[in-house]
Image 1: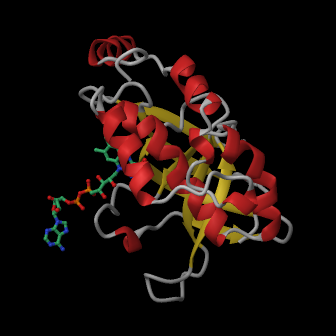
Image 2 (image 1 turned 180 degrees about the vertical axis):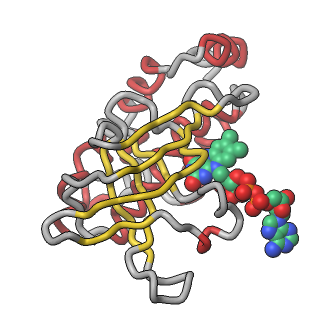
Length: 206
Ligand SMILES: Cc1cc2nc3c(=O)[nH]c(=O)nc-3n(C[C@H](O)[C@H](O)[C@H](O)COP(=O)(O)OP(=O)(O)OC[C@H]3O[C@@H](n4cnc5c(N)ncnc54)[C@H](O)[C@@H]3O)c2cc1C
């Protein structure tokens, strides 16, 4: 970190609103993105202690540099643990080698700490889903090629903490509007507001 990303470097990236693509590539070369996944899945079998050490060292440069790394395996592990076999295979290579950037979209204007209050909906139209609503604070959604782990209400009649489905949505899906949210610092990844309007051609598995 002292060599590749001292705090002064992190500040320069932040001032310029630049995603540190070279640093990301170096993390990939060192196999860091494979760290949390088990050996028999192609990962490096790391546990919480290793991930905390890496995150802490990255955090000496800046919180946002740490989030560049941490923010990618959080949704990755969700796919690994809870996805279907097909979803796991679909995303495996990119999760292990840093080929994917996946953002998390839980928060909404009326759903923060109380995440189960989320109102964005996904309606099954047979073969595809139509998503509607607004998400807030989606960190890293605006980066090229990013996927969005988007939490959507699929059963409005269920209790509010149930009937929610995680959908994996490409950030260039038709009908999706991404708007940068102004922040003090945190400019490496950027955080964003998204509006989903009739993304009729989405093929998602619940
Ligand atoms: C820079 C940034 C990046 C973010 N990135 C993401 C992201 O990538 N994906 C995503 O989904 N979200 C993201 N978030 C959203 C973040 O998860 C929410 O801000 C957080 O969940 C809090 O929600 P809120 O801002 O609506 O605050 P609120 O929930 O309105 O809380 C406001 C205050 O009230 C307190 N409070 C709330 N409920 C209670 C209660 N029951 N009892 C006592 N006190 C309470 C809270 O502790 C807090 O101090 C990001 C936010 C920021 C600022």
